[in-house]
Length: 216
Image (cartoon, rainbow, N blue to C red; front, side, top):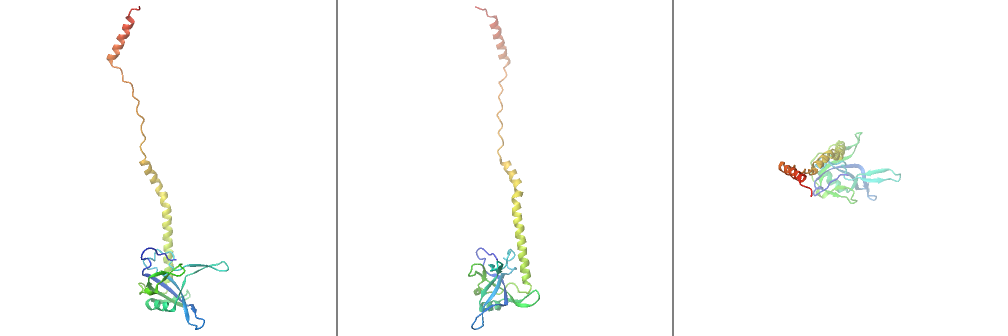
């Protein structure tokens, strides 16, 4: 699911709506369309788009009775809301790979708001504006391409971050060694001062005197 955070992050989002002709709910009594299930995503050309690894505005994980997992990306919208989006937006045919037209692609701008289930973002149709970018049939291919590029960039950044501490380790060790205080040198032993020549002669005279002294 698309990630937008911070002050003003939900302001003036460029949306892409996929409106399928058969993705509707009808009133049982009147037979009229009561709800239109629409898939919204952020336009990859929006300034916030290139960093998004998932441009879908809603990704609801659903596990079936058989244990198989599916994902619901659609929001329930009223017919009036869809009419307002189509009226202000840029419209192109939504086609299958085989070229069959199955609905409409509409680009438009609006503020984002949290949905009721708090598991997605939907456009606030009270703030609808003309789109910055035109709709075109192959836009879904470019949406997927943008997501894949964002995933590759995120993976590369993660690898670089993991490698950074290893590269910094030798530098840190060298820096730590440089900061270690130098080892103190042991004080040099002081040698006794050499006897002067005069002192030596005096000692010799005293020794001779003692030898010459009469014994009592």
